[in-house]
Amino acid sequence: MKKYLIVVFAVMLLALASAVYSIDFDNSQIPGLKIANDVDGALNTAKIENKTVMIVFDQDSCVYCDMFKKDVLSNPDVQKELNEKCIVIFVDINKHPEIANKYKVFGTPTIQFLDSNGKEITKVEGYSGADEFLNTLKEI
View 1 (cartoon, helix red, strand yellow):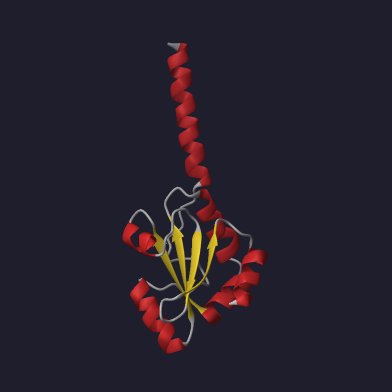
View 2 (view 1 turned 30 degrees about the vertical axis):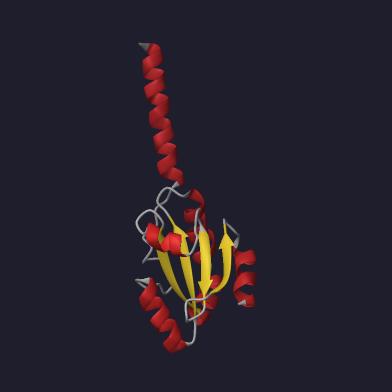
């Protein structure tokens, strides 16, 4: 009976730890960052405003996605650069696998930069810190 209770307790601790480390951001509410609602709308706006489209491919329970949102996309310098140069859109690869397949995204976080015609400029796969990401933005 004691072993059973220990196993149950351990499972509960793992579930709690997972919840603590997987802070789920509401994609449409990263304070200071302008976010579009859909890829087609982002591409249309990019044409009108002569901007780049940045698609952030993420998924629920992705610790590195949450770190990217918290550490990088919430950074004021990154936000300034993004708001000036890019139309930002989030795509959950589990909710929209057809979009992930179209852009050949297999893991998260993946950041895809497109010109206003939808042509790939560059892709960043995996987590990168604010300074490294800011350098990528300045090269675009």
